[in-house]
Image (cartoon, rainbow, N blue to C red; front, side, top):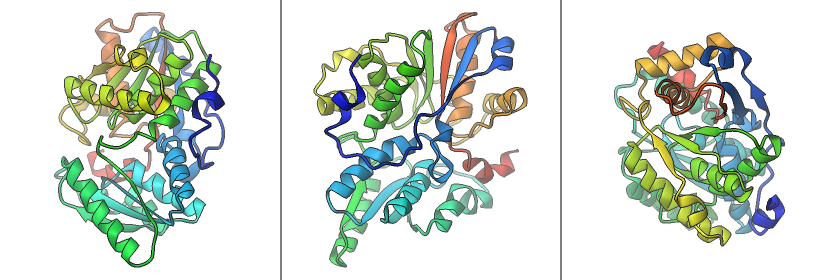
Length: 334
C-alpha cells in the first residue's frame, strides 16, 4: 500500500477536515435489500454543514494560500454544495469568497433561490454573482476570470477554482486521500457506489483504491450527464490526475463504470425513483439524503441491485457526499 504522505505530501493542503469520516453499517437496509450495505459518511466532514467538497477544497485552498491569494472565486448551480463549502472554508482561512451561481435547474420555486445553500452562503458573508447559463463551463470560467480581473485591479489577489476540464484536478486529490482512508477502514468490500458529477470525487476515489491495491468496482451514478458522456469525462479527469501524481493512467482508466438509470429527468430534478430512495433511507435508517446527488446515488444502487449487478450477500459501500442544506431549497418538491 502506498502511504498518504508518499502520494500527496508535495501538494499544499489547507487543514479543513475534522479527521476520518465514519464508515457505518446500515443494518435495517441491509436486511431489506439482502446485501451488506455500508455508508461512508462524508456528509460528516464537519465544516459548514459538511459534505465531500471539504476534501477537495483542502487542496484547492492549500494551493491558493501557497500562492498568496486573499480571494477565492468559484462557480456552481444555485443550490451548489461546492460554493457553500467554499464560502465556509474561505471564512475559516480568512479569505474573501465570491460565488457565481449558474442557472442549471429550470422551473424551481422561490425557496430554491433563497434558502438552503444560498442562505448559508449569505450568512457566511460571501459575495454572490450570477451566470445565466447552466451548461457552459468555458463561459462560466471566463466570467469568473473577468470578476477576478476586477479583484486584481482593486489590489486583491484572486484564486479561481475552475469548473472546466482544462485545468489540473487538484480537488480530486482529496478523494485519493479518501480512497486510502476507506482502504484503512475496510479492505474486503465487493463494490463502491458513488455519485458522479464533475468527476473529481469518482476519479479520485477510484485512484485512491487502486493505489491501495484494491480492485473492487466503483459504480459511478450519473447525476448530470448520460453514462457515456460521464465515462468520457471521468476518464479525462483520471488522465489529468495520473499526470499530477506521476502514475500510469492505465491503473484506473480501464476501470470506469457509469450508470445513468437514476439520472432522469435531468440534473437537479427529482423523479419518482429519487423521491422513493430519499424517503426509504430516511424511514429505514433515519439518514437524510440530498435531492441532487445522494438520493440519485441510492436510487442507482437500488437499480443495480434489482438488475443483478449487485448480488445478494455482497458487501457494498455507498459514499454519502452530503449536500443536505439543498433539501430546504427543494421543499416545494415534497
